[in-house]
Length: 101
Image (cartoon, rainbow, N blue to C red):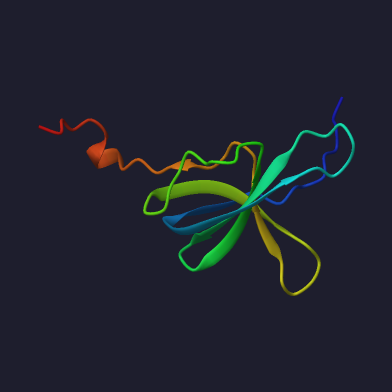
């Protein structure tokens, strides 16, 4: 039996130097919802939003970061939103196993 799945747009990927981070929150959209923070990350001159339950991110300004994101909105100006649990540090494969002696 074959299923027909809608073709989803592939996730966009971003990578670059984290230039700035601003945090707003905590926010609660409805009663009983856990608090979340909206982090605006500037990477290579572009702003991305990341929603997280944590006030402090595990990445900091000056780090090279990688992430998946989606463009949200139907207007000319689309919000770029980073997917949950996709934000992380970029590890250069050529430097990964080298000893820092």
